[in-house]
Image (cartoon, rainbow, N blue to C red; front, side):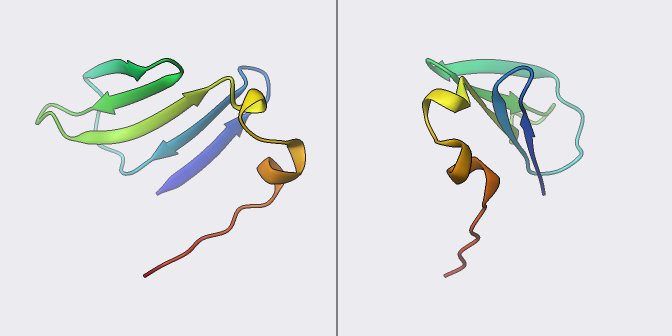
Length: 66
């Protein structure tokens, strides 16, 4: 899994695997899902991320497992 913050485009992207993306769909305002050829989600992009989180929150990531 890869996580990328792009300051220029103001996006936060979670890439679940490296499968080729064949379709993208904005499922809610500012939330885009990327799909592979089997209609499985392989990426999630959040647009306008600076409006959703502070710089401090974006500079520190916490991972939690159950």
